[in-house]
Image 1 (tube, one colour):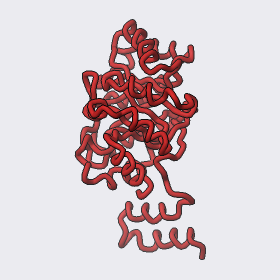
Image 2 (image 1 turned 60 degrees about the horizontal axis):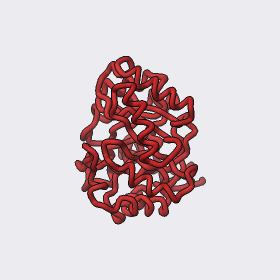
Image 3 (image 1 turned 30 degrees about the horizontal axis):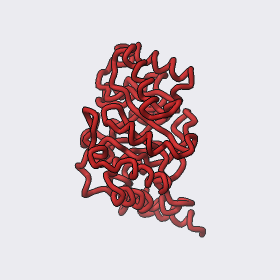
Image 4 (image 1 turned 90 degrees about the vertical axis):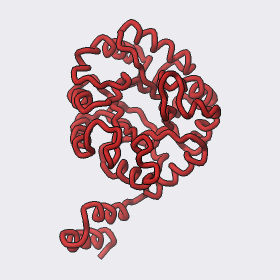
Length: 285
């Protein structure tokens, strides 16, 4: 009997009496042809955007134009180190104040080998259009790979913010952005995103303990399965529950990988040691 058949029969034979579903899943993972890596190339839904499984977050405790990463003062070096280690997805936002550091980090890299995701807080169409131009200047790039409406909570956002959505659509048609979407911060907003054909990419909060999430994990996963069926790109955030799982990182990473609903996920390392540790934990999980 080959190894695949052995594991399959073992899981079937003893799963009902001895193994929890997670334990069976762990057995099956062992039979994977290659282990999962933070630097694996993934495609975000139907967008065609190819990037790495792990994104370099720059917005830990980020608001008002700064974050833990920008306050540390060496974010550009951290991002370049991440790229050297194989990470290519740069996660930033206007409210994090990290556009200049991302711009500097990317300035000497092949632009087509990296992906930049940023987020817009404006709810006024005219301001959003001006913001897009400003973001490109700050990021020193002709185009933005992923642009999201940031921190949406309203269940009717696809109607309420139609003007901003139209501005994003126009920018996509002009090649100024490659994909547009939303960062959800309520289950109502998440369900609206799942129902919207406009959403190319969704940034969603997901961790096994439900910390700083839109709803309990299983409810959120159910909505994300709908999104995946429609070909939307899905990127996870709050993987460590905004620090709630800092001492349970392996469990959090294993959960993010095991749900099967995320194309990629973002975690904001604050120094090179944390970054290296995260990359190792993904491989170990």
